[in-house]
Length: 438
Image 1 (tube, one colour):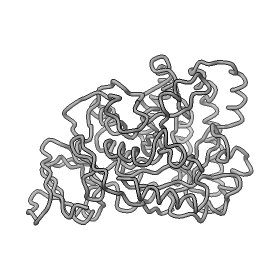
Image 2: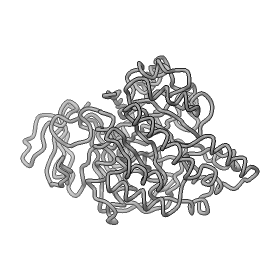
Image 3: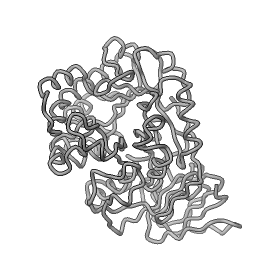
Image 4: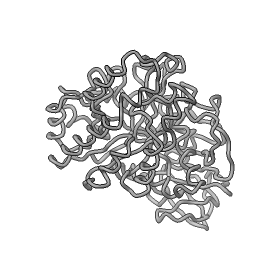
């Protein structure tokens, strides 16, 4: 850890949402001072930030980093390097690895791997099954329970209504749902059987399948007053449902993919556009954007879910669903702010502050004394394209390849330590396990 770090003359996003040209000092992993006249201290490192914007480090609240068991797609070393390059200082990882993360022992194994490999901070969900209710309520530390209601297979699929209700009825910790109705998906798979066209993916796992599952999860959340988080909201219908009926204990997220891509992407990049839940229409894009700006949707998630190009090249339906995202999510959203769709302060709230609040992660998500020194300096004055050869993710592709973006990270700081600096990654640093209020 750098003993002391002084960032000079940055455009700093203050907790009020205002931008101020000022300086920030970190000491012992914390933000120590924010102000114009910070006197030098012995042996401190200085970053001249003239013209750069300083934001709270991104917290990526839904990622699939594939370790253990699927390391040919990604591992915690390559994924955390991708995080550092993308301004992501903390991540929350999903349980669908091999083996699936469904017990304290398996959670501990993941935490041990991350302690050895991850250069950014980390937390892990525990996965729900029809049989592991005691583990769901006792495993620690975990950010919450991941419940696959549909479009999954194997042990993590919980598509039985009684089993789902039992999970909501027991315990108090946050339940994060992948909300798609499995029965509808299976019926529609039969309807479209034999097609090798990836465009049918959005028809099989259609808007109605998502709405049905979200309605059911919401009804159980209300019945048991249970903390609910709806992962990767993708449809206009779900957004309008929450606009009309969203208890204070319910939150929702949206991905940049569901804001910026739609079914037209199948004709441009083929199966690289395939993800769960699927891409929707331009109308869905527009309604999701409005819901995000209005606070109906609370924050942004990447749903980083890498597969190799060889896997994605398989004919539908054998090609897997998912796409990478941690390296591009911040510049994607900051580019939207440069185009007037939102503000820089909104982006920081959606990608850091609101995530820390929802998962009760202490001392994250703001640039203020006493907060953790997890920070990112971005350049909002220059544009460059998303290029395959620049990516740190092991899968080495992006659905946004070729898109010109601004707001690329220049320096990423984790716990007061510079892990990314003008294109260079310090792989020697190790992040910390996050703590949660769940």
